[in-house]
Length: 204
Image: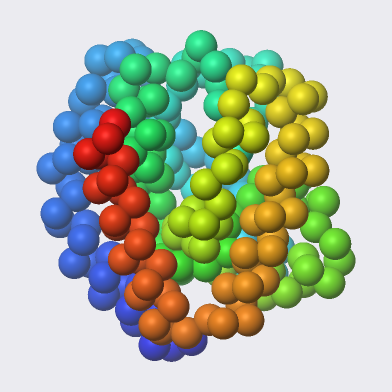
């Protein structure tokens, strides 16, 4: 685990200086588009069930009455720039700060909202929450049907589809990762995530 933490910090410190100019540009564009704070702060469930505060680029117009969800989208509230950030998978760049703080690893099980963690079977919840959540995971690479399953859904239909169809698959991949976890698996996940990013940029 000490080696994993060293790897997280070292790679993050290498990547951050390269991302800062692009992050500043993104923040400027979002500020012009949203005329509101461009960083969204929320809470997720971290290791051992501890609540952690996470930071992401704001990609949608604020709606105080809307229920926050991970898997879905906010429909017409998603901005133009926000839609691009989501499609390219870079809305979560500010989460690198969480990696430096020690709340996240670069690779690990997907982080979830408290109400979704409450849906985990007891033994699976205990195991998945025994490690830090990751910015990248197997489900991000392998579970390509997720967007299709949640497309055009809202409200209760979105919640039901997420809990019944998406969450079990994510948990399966989280358990598979925990069974086979190694430095080389983390390296493969990071490499494949990078390839996926450039593939999206090429076709998007």
